[in-house]
Image (cartoon, rainbow over all chains, first blue to last red; front, top):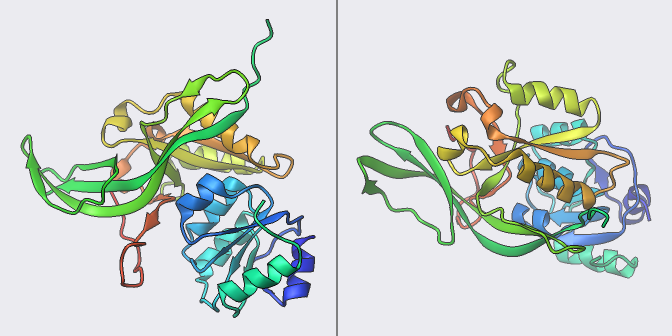
Amino acid sequence: MTTQELIDLLGLKALSTFEHREVNGVFLSDMLSDVMAGAKSGNIWITVQTHKNIVPAANLVDVSAIIITNGKNVPAETIELASKHDIAILWTESQTFDLVGRLYSLGLATK
Amino acid sequence: MAECVHEWKMTNRQFGFVVYERCSCCQVVRAYYSPQDTWDDYMEEGHHWSIVENAQTFRFDLECVECGVYVDLSDLLGLMYCTSCMEDCEVEIQRKKYEAERTFVLVGFGYLPESMSKPISEGKLQILSEYFNQRRDTSRSRIKIIPNSLIPAISRCRGEFIHDVGMLSLEPPGERKPLF
């Protein structure tokens, strides 16, 4: 599955500009240290954190996209930094639990 | 015997806190890892330390899964990304150079203030870069970790550490103040 397919299937909104890529699993955490320790290359990272520090953390471990849930407002500086580093920031009004359920039903899980 | 092409794994992970303190007399900043969240002011050897910021973080070591060689990273405070605050800073110069090659530059900090004169060794930072590159699709981009001693004036640095700030607070996080 690709980030483009994920956007189409889940009705996600792309906030940053990026190249689409393969998605191979899901990592769920609101802590940057968790992501740095455990997320794998190609995972999508689901969080409610919107501070610009999520971008270098995502970049460090090469996640395929960050999905911001619960309709959280994402600052312009976060989107700008993500676009600069080719990091996908996707956005949804869905609650994290609901989104995770839909991802699971699509066959994506922790990798 | 052929030399091992190391394949690194993260080991000995310990979750804790990075504590940033400033001396109210001489204004020097120090930062270190602590397993506990610390907020008390205290006196020590002529300094009066007050907390500037605490952040949740973790520390770890690296071990080669092939040959077992072990790299102690207990002196690593954290990774900072450059915000281009000083045009003449060597970190900014290196950032521009490497980003043109699709390489993302981070600054590997040791404890402060000691690491400004005695930074984490180039060898350790090279291994740390290797570890994060082994975790990623390097056909897309790479990671390069450089020493904090390349920053000429830490007091003017506005780089940001990749740490979890304000995670234990019941208040929404505000704008992060400069540390230095």
